[in-house]
Amino acid sequence: MTIRLNDTAPDFTAETSQGTINWHEWIGDNYAILFSHPKDFTPVCTTEFGAVAQLADEFEKRGTKVAGISIDPVEDHKKWVADVEKVSGKKVTFPIIADEDLKVAKLYDMLPGDAYLPDGRTPNDTATVRTTFIIGPDKKVRLALIYPMSVGRNFDEILRALDAIRLADGAPIATPANWKPGEDVIVALSVSDEDAKARFGDVKMELPYLRKIKQPAS
Image 1: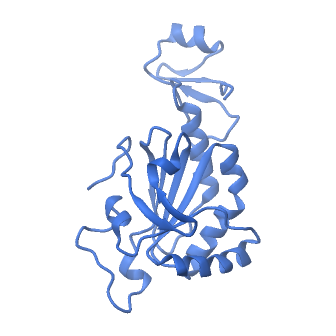
Image 2: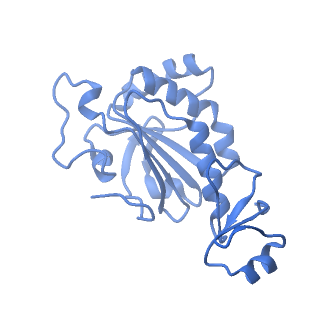
């Protein structure tokens, strides 16, 4: 299946480094981030897991749960965590999903339906398992980013995107290019000029269709 924005994120039950989870139940009323990896004990992925460990408090402040996923068994995940903690200097507090049968990777369209794990495989065999999803409390996919194995993910950008998504949820606004929290935001085209002024006060009319306001209080 193909995963598109605003699709319901596929549900699944899986073993993790912290026990069995049912994905939708585990998310609950929170936002969630699912970030995938082609194999444990790989250099780029180790730095990425470390980056997430370092940002754990930031995700928690935003009501967001984070889970990693790798195409290896739970036993390997638990061993790998020691390396991640050594590199990052932080405890790994989030679960790592074991996807040995590729069920989740295929559900989320990271691998074709006929993919399998060959004997003596390398990370190249599952290279496309390098996707990050942000999922809303309504279990809808809000963002999907796919990275090649040679490019480490920028989790500051993922955090920024999460802030933008949370800010715009339920409000007729959007964020401009390179927006950072605290900067002006854009009024949605669904709101008339009159309604924008009544709702937000001062509206900066840069173009008839580009209207900016101060970031509303979250």
